Image (cartoon, rainbow, N blue to C red; front, side, top):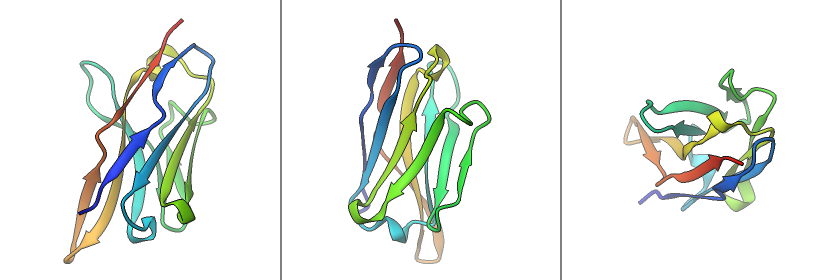
Length: 119
């Protein structure tokens, strides 16, 4: 059973920073890619950043230059460093892993962690 567990969310002031962690129950090498998505109240879930098994990263335009996704293979953990936070970054942040299972690409999601940017 694949499990992804996010942590690190909370209340942060505008302009502040926070780091989210996504711990996988197994080796993250087995994932084709992993990523962070977010969902604000009343909005659809959207991509924030992804990282492939070879370390290639991709970012939403709204977070480029402010957020950094990284991975620690030894800890089976993916991180999202969020800097220069804005009120519009307020959302529930979800970790996603995509893995080939029995010939199919399967999505695995964490339970989400709330990030609130407010003074």
